[in-house]
Structures are given as structure tokens and as C-alpha cells.
Amino acid sequence: MLGNIFRKEPTNPKVPAGQSVTDRFPIMTYGPTPRVSQEDFELRIFGLAKERSFSWRDLMALPQTDMTKDFHCVTHWSKMDVSWTGVLTTELTKHLEPDSSATHVMFHCYGGYTTNLSIEDFLAENCMVAHKLGGKDIAVEHGGPVRTIIPHLYAWKSAKWLSGIEFMRGDKPGFWERNGYHMRGDPFKEERYS
Image 1 (cartoon, helix red, strand yellow):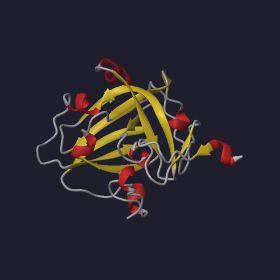
Image 2 (cartoon, rainbow, N blue to C red; image 1 turned 120 degrees about the vertical axis):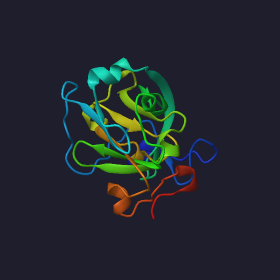
Image 3 (cartoon, one colour; image 1 turned 30 degrees about the vertical axis):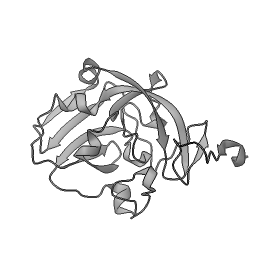
């Protein structure tokens, strides 16, 4: 049955080496699934930035973007042309006050998950704080109510159940990075493990 779910597309330049394509959207999660309502959602900004929090309403009041990007999981599957809606990280940062000395961010999530990014990766084109998947509210299993989408890196960098963004001077590993995953995770360089 698994052979029918995943397929190789060796001539498709959008598919990184070592990946198989699926039309489904597998759910990969370590630990229990956090359940946070839109009413209880809060996105905290801290570290080398002026501390502030965004409620669901605050996030919805910011300019929204729709985008369609490919999604590559480190476990060797890719889902092509996934549609998301949310706030681009470049737009979000206009409403923050990060210190010029910040070189990295750490995403913090409900449930305790963390993952790191350089400022350059955080502000790269099409990176977003997303709240819709395929035009519908993101289901809790896929990281709702809010998750990040960092489409140019492996999906573990697209943190589910986002609760905070910490601006940092210097890099430090998040959950999977402490457990052997690559500090960056570029799928086209196969940066899977450290």
C-alpha cells in the first residue's frame, strides 16, 4: 500500500534528491498534540526584541498573504503545491523591534517544541506565520491554530503550534537539532543530519 502513496519523480527539478512525492499530507509529530483555541492563542515576541504579544485578532489584523509552495519532510517525502495563508515574516517584522545584533531566531511552540533559524532564513522570501492550509483553518494535527512555513528548508523548521519567537545573538540548537538533525536543513543540499 505504501508504494501507492509515495512516488519517485527523478526528472522533476522541484523534488530534492532522496525525496518521494505524495498527494497526501502525512502527519509527523513527536509527543502529544497541543490543543490551543484561537481565543487562547498568543504569540510572544522576546529576546533581542521589544517584548510584545499578538493575540489571534492582532495577527488577523496584519496584512495577509496567500501562497503555494512545496513542502519537503526530512523523512524523505515531499508534497507539492501546498496552499497557505498567513502573515509573511517580513511583514511581521515591520511590527517588531528586533535589535540589530540579533543573528538568529528560535521558534517556541505549545507543547515545548523549539527550532532555530538564522535571521536570513527567517526573513527569506515566502516565509510566513500561517493560519490557513488549503483555504481552511489549519487543523490541530497540522499545527493549528498557527504554525510557521519556511518552504526553502526541511519541514521540521516549519514549527507547528507556534507560541513564541525569540530573537537571539548567535545560534543554538532547538529540539531536533539537539537530537542529531542539521542546524539548517536545506533539502536541496540534503542537510538532514549533523
